[in-house]
Length: 199
Image 1 (cartoon, rainbow, N blue to C red):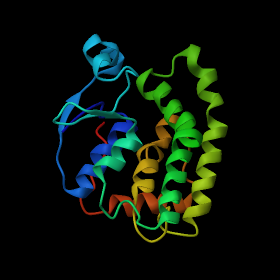
Image 2: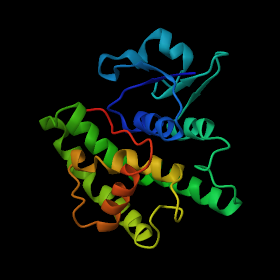
Image 3: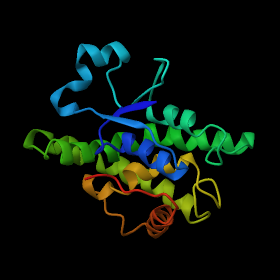
């Protein structure tokens, strides 16, 4: 297997972290989105959507969308609960991450880290703050009840949401008012096999 990705991307980091927690390795192919490498004909031939991360299997089949790739990599591991209800909860958190969290926290971070917060993007950057804080409040509520999002053990839900939450400050979000989230970040960093996101 090989993964095409950008090490500064939270969506790509999810896969690196999951693989490390599982003790697995995978060939990594760096793709520079700022140089338009995801729009090259050779990359678009693999995935017309032109986005990373992308998983390519040995037989040439490909999978896109970070959370879908995570499910493939973590198949038959404890990171995916066997209970139908808990599995649905896992999906619930992953949909939340993509629709209520990532569009605010990750986009604000992208504008700041990748684009350097240019003047013509400052209004968009500011517009992401309220939605990001709403998402953090939802997570804080759950994490005051359970140490991890699904209960007492780490799952794909935690890895999905950790990726951009732990660098939320890079998008202008202050985690000081969220002690349960900060405790959860600490618990994930203590997991055997944890690796940090590359700068």
